Image 1 (cartoon, helix red, strand yellow):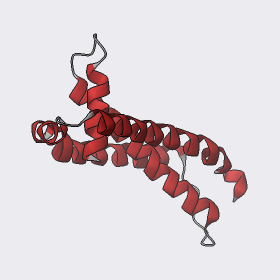
Image 2 (cartoon, rainbow, N blue to C red):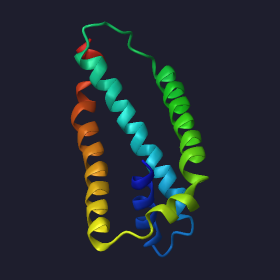
Image 3 (cartoon, rainbow, N blue to C red):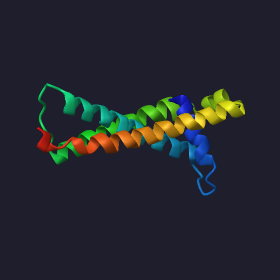
Image 4 (spheres, helix red, strand yellow):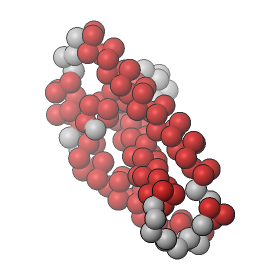
Amino acid sequence: MEYLYYKLWQQFTKIKTNDMPATNAMIFMTLLQFLNLSLLYILFSYYSIIESEVMTKNEIYITSGAMYSILTLLNYLILYQRRDKIYKKYQLENKKQKFLGNILLALYIIGTFVLIFYFGPKYTASNW
């Protein structure tokens, strides 16, 4: 995750109007992780033999808010506070490593959204 955070951070620095690229990278990384965890929950619920209760809207909002808050706190402690060390660790990449890193980042972002948009609609109360 450190490397993907670094690559995302470097992409955000290229936006001239972005005055907080490290913070924005942490927030976007949290969103991607939240979507990945949601996808795992969807896949488990959809393909599981074990029946589980369908949550109400309020329960979904509370659970989602709590999960996103926990991820944000973890990313703040693990990535954002250590951003200088992470920067020093990866700043000396050569061109090949930068290119492969950008491909990896793009695949991670695209893959996350494609999978959540593919499997997300399959998870509805009517499937229960």
